Image (cartoon, rainbow, N blue to C red; front, side):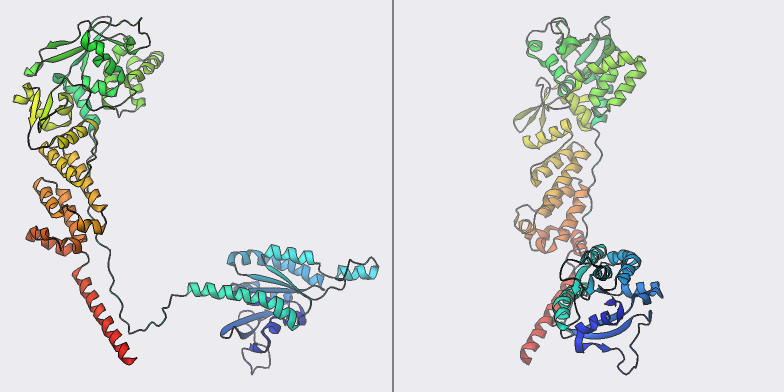
Length: 581
């Protein structure tokens, strides 16, 4: 605790507090001990609270600090508590402290964060009442340091301010001693926290418990990127044989292109009302733009007698054909770009605007057409099964409606099944064997929406088997992720009592080429070895699988052996302690 003061009287403040316990570092020396870095500091030590040693570095005069400020700073940096004292009757020395040393001390004290005590020592000559106006008293008043100036200096330094009229035992012990002891206790608590934690009664011969490593990280299950937009783009470009909507120009009657009612109706209520409205089914009739200027038929209209059964190419099953007349000349010019935007769905609006601008070469025309397109596409794929006039799938006695165009674009196996010379290509009802209706419905939902959310591990495995049957790899990977997520979310107690056999899930994953799930389940069994090794189906693992699980098991055999030896030594130590007692 370095201390700086002015005069011989104030230099004895800390010595007065420590009392008879204060001793020089070298009692046999005839001169006081000096600090090796800065001889301006006198050093002595004492004990407080019975067994706490205190080292004091005291500077009796402020003038001595000017000899080497760098060494003064090094002494202050090693301190825990700083005590600054001055005489209230020496205003010149106080001004020297406030104007000369305080600006240099302030940033250091704030940076180190050590507690500071500012002590004003001495009694003012005119403290009993208001200052006198006579010349003699005024001179006495001007030579004293007022209470307000000392308080302001303490605020600047962030210090605790004390005033001691004298250095007797009452003031030093009652006021200064209580504040100093409070900061001592705080410093001791802080040092106790920074020391390494020492256990009570710890003995070096006590055995240490073995270290248990963390289980190995489970291998990741990777999912392919979605091809939903690319599949629908392929359907628009190459799925002509499954098209059931044809567009004609309103002025010339020229055929503009083909499309698919299932896609158009799923994209937009505009096409849904136009193609599958009640009037369109019961009594096809032409709609005039002047009667429904703001309605859905201001851009398109159905042809009179527009629903016909026409023969299809490649021997495809004949079906109803919807004919739409495009009334807007700008839409006629950019129908292909508009349909591409509607089918892909993932196109940025800016890309569509650039494509139309490149084709029209007229900013005004581009703006007019871009205002009309939102009426065609303000809802994207909100419905799954809307039209019930296409081929249905017979699954477990239930008929699930679906659309050949969507199935062909999303599944290569069904594309071959509906496009070749198979019976399914000419039948409206296609039987599905070996799959339940709920599982196949989840499979169809993925084909339509590109998402999969099985409700349980068993349903996820059933959909995985169906996906493997129809070679839909991304759906298979999504099901693998679902199985892993469900098993990993189970706590250990539920995992031990569940009726789901993870070993049988492993067998099914290997049987249906779910390689990522197979590897993940092996690691999962190894990480929960103590749970699965006690189950009867653990014996169903092959010899190769059991070797891999034993190699990856957690906790390892070595740890269990070390744990057994540790517990045995603890028991022996307890017995020996009891015999000694």
